[in-house]
Length: 158
Image (cartoon, rainbow, N blue to C red; front, side, top):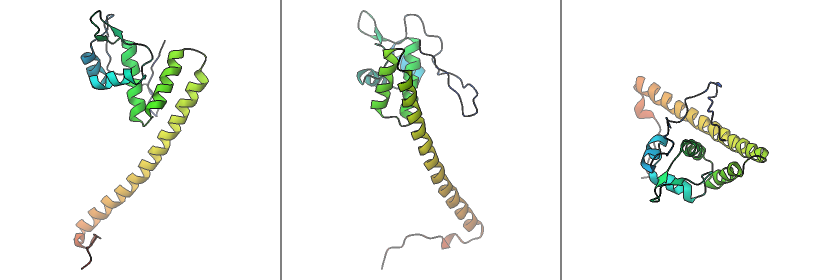
């Protein structure tokens, strides 16, 4: 069984995805899209790309019916993608989860490697933010001093 617990950096449990109570027969693709915050197109893409851990149920008419487990998994995929995990990485993770017990070490290694990538990107973003903050302070100071016209700007050669 897939268990999803989200933790903030401080370790406090955050609210789970907006999946709410899902009826036993599941929900339509439109409702699944609303509950997960992704488009119906993205849901279909995740299924085609092999990113789901189990086949999505279908009605006798062939319409998709998403169960609570499907919605929770979609939220995981969305968060992994939003943090820069490549589709092939999400696909590999889905394959490992779908295979069941026995590959936990590989799953852990995949998540640890992705975490390291995310931390590196965060560090880079924080450095970039420092430069932006410096520029903001420079503009504020120059404007307050009435010196804004002396701020550097590229000038075309004559």
